Image 1 (cartoon, one colour):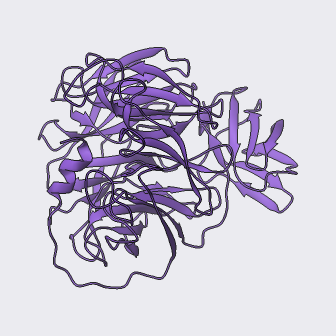
Image 2: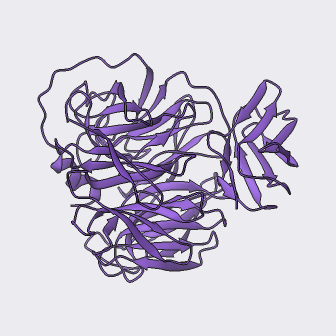
Image 3: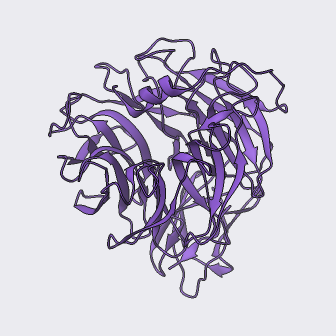
Length: 465
């Protein structure tokens, strides 16, 4: 197979279920094209300019994938074509850096060969103007097939690779300048094939999942320190889920929420919650593969109403090609929109919430244009659920005096920025960006921005470390 997504496409089972209508939502879909790139499989990320940026796994001039830009109203444009050995191939995921530039990984390509796809993958960075530089080419020993990164409170990036190392994948750190450090190589017993970006917890450590391996072979949840000490905090047993995917989400009480692609009573995946040390684990919801969907792949996104949002790759109320859903912290699931397998796209949906309150996402397949490997180039969509605007601090944890970016809309004319009530000096860079520093005396809590039209708050507590 050319990618991890292709073997999972074949693994999705055929479902015959009754179609029920999901609650009415406002959803607008735009088709990706061979020019802008096809088959996106990672969430969009909001840039400092207020636009959304994404990666397309295929298409582009040489078929090696692209970085594309989407304006909030749906205008799509190309940012960069990848060219295989030159700068990587088949990009997967982006993350915003403290300098306002975007960084990401390519699953294949680069200077070193690991497989028949022609390369072990790369880490890259690029400006909003599209100037790209390769920061690291994997060589197998330090990992292969990187699947994404997250920005740490120290301003460095922490990421995972699906393979390489001892053959079971790795965890790494890389600075914005390209200094690379291998933190951990999985050996199978502690997990295999990490999948989904890491999330930094309130304690400063990073949490993630592996698709396979561990005590029972069905995947794990782990925590790793900055220094590379890894602890497995849960081994899935198939009954409670298997093949966990997507990034975990941590809430105010420290618990982590996530999804599994498979397992559970119906084999259609689960939603779970786990305490930071793994002492308590609870399956909140078992997907049936019917109208509620099946095989959730995107992880969960925390909305600014305290509920979570996600998507499935199968089932649903449309053509059995996926469903977007909302779930409460107690596990009550509501279907929001069915992916119909045609114009609205389908399979492997991703979600993120922009600071306008609107959710934006992608689907890996379908749409109106044909791309490799099957079922269309995929789509990008917006989903309005009536939630209001907020601001986001990048990164969501820093030390006293450290630089922070605040993203939002309507920031021109801002009169105050506070960290849990402590006033901070700030600069309004644009209507969508403020730069500031964590003020002396600040404690963990909400960041608030007072604009001419009202006060906007972060949806999660900013952690002062």
